[in-house]
Amino acid sequence: MMQKKICLLGAFGVGKTSLTRRFVDSIFSDTYLTTVGVKIDKKQLDVGATPVSLLIWDIAGEDDVSAVRTSYLRGAAGYLLVVDVTRAQTLDVAQSIRERVAREIGDIPFLCLLNKTDVVEWDIPTGRIDELQAAGWNVLHTSAKTGAGVESAFSDLAQRISK
Image 1 (cartoon, rainbow, N blue to C red):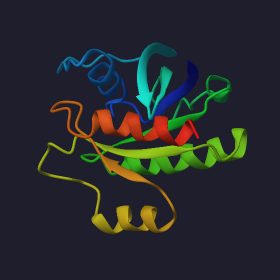
Image 2: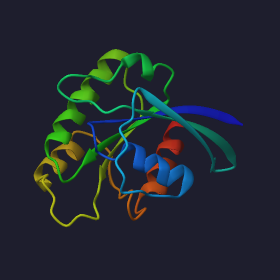
Image 3: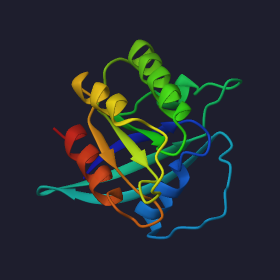
Image 4: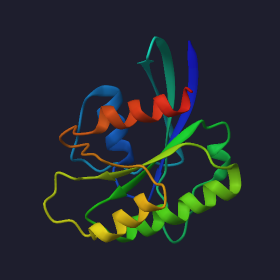
């Protein structure tokens, strides 16, 4: 069996922990829990005929004061960059994280997850999303609350890193 480390990155409160809990345990809670440092979970997936064990590093959110510790990213095969569609500034944070990760550890596979898509009022203009896609970002829509797109996001990243 192949084992791969992936990281969830993004601003505070974008839903990284909720996405992980939905994927690993199939549950969702409205209770907000701040991640301190890193929380590590594990889940096995079948990628084609190959079983892959994902080590999922849910890394504390980033804000103006604290940045993601790049030491947490060492050994990662890929990452999910999470954005809260109800807060446009979380996309700015995601772009900053993306640049820093590329500079610090290189160009590893990643997916940008637009999370909380179950909410009707989005704060991110579609033009900004189009620009990211034009720049080569793979952007997926997810909702940790409803589960929409969560399984496929992790599966898609697993396929990309298992090649």
